[in-house]
Length: 96
Image (tube, rainbow, N blue to C red):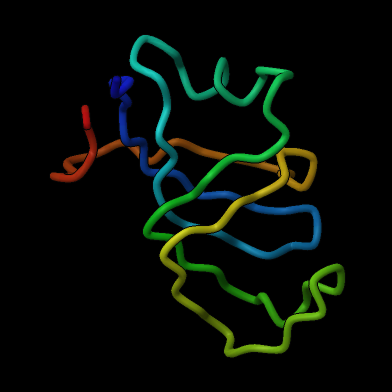
């Protein structure tokens, strides 16, 4: 059985100062902050993700271009310093 999800566009700044832009898929009826505050999951999945300044990520020992596109990033919630929901006329935002 498929659980209905809402696709939310986000900008994320991590503790290592890297910047991630993409989509987080949240259970229908939950706000982004409710989803982030759940204790049973330690990672969030960011789809259609792009990351900037990832050459500075020492914990993963990545050396890369200034901006890198990824299909999916699994991000530890503890590494999030700041997150914002991007509102606007985004044709992809909405129910899945």
